[in-house]
Length: 358
Image (tube, rainbow, N blue to C red):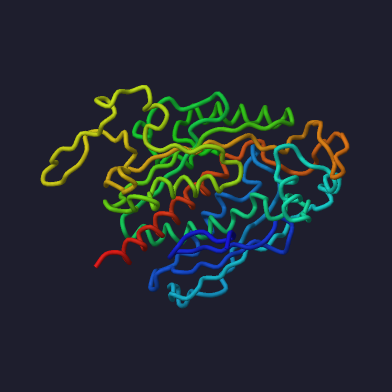
């Protein structure tokens, strides 16, 4: 059950980093939706390795094959099965890690919990599993588009380099104009150069991805244990390397008084809206019709090409210098993953609300 995400719209994923492939089954997808398979592939291309000099040089086409649930270009309402086959594994690169626990990886906890682990690229705990999420998210975005809901994520900080403005200060259509996926072209250049230097040093760096949801209708979410922001937070923190989540003004709002933080209602030509959006589009766990925005912090990739102290499976002190092909910074490739998790959460909650309303 813990390989599945969602309630009514539900993705169950399978596969390991160096297995035959990564795939999934989607239940609860509405019937009659025109499926743009090229769009789904484009979303995968945004996530795939080897797309720029600042990502891992593992070369994978990551071509999706749909196995069921689509007929004559439309969803049938039946489970949608799909697979992306692994084509460029170099499993021998991980032989020196077979009996050694990599610092800050899942190696130790996975081995202790299950008594066995796939050391090749992390197996099931590898970020390659997120392929399934991107496919599921792309399908969810296709459905959400019919409701007028759009989702934009972008890199807003890499290490010490960050965008100073709010998301409203930028043209979000420019996110894909650089390899870092940031709407600020000057900052993006700085970020790219910084990541390139980090990669040259054999080290890694983290940062922040900001996500914005536009067009979400009022009333999505439940007031107690089904809060929309809690669901979004859980979805984001399920992503590999995600370490923190905040929505609306988040921690920044702690510096303000209630009189400064409150979003004042007003009548805008017959529509009740708020003059500000400190709440991030969610109040009482329910969407209020304003833009939903949140931030996700990602840690530096723990696999570094530098010697580190650790222990082996027997607890003996040793050292490890990783080999293989690894990202110096996950953020550029994590942008579509953040969008995918947001899309699946929103579609699932929209479908839940449809079942609870007469």
